[in-house]
Length: 72
Image (cartoon, rainbow, N blue to C red; front, side):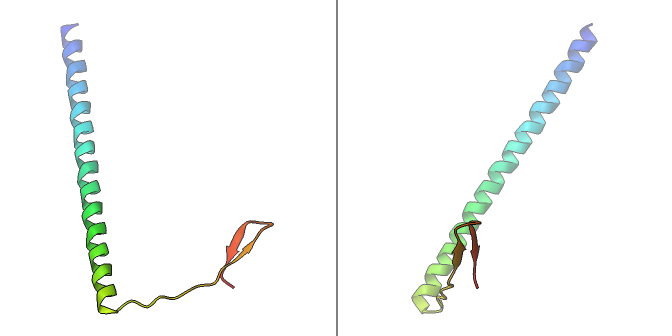
């Protein structure tokens, strides 16, 4: 019976460690996405300052019956 309790504690401990690793990985990915977004925002701002941006307007048509959007 005591051995069963140790096994349950061990399994619970393993699951807690796995969960902690998953949470750490989620946080790492969140930070990476924020850094990447900041990088691209800075690149875009610098391109705008240099005048390297070309705006292209795309006309869209919407079918009110089927609620779909078309480009031509």
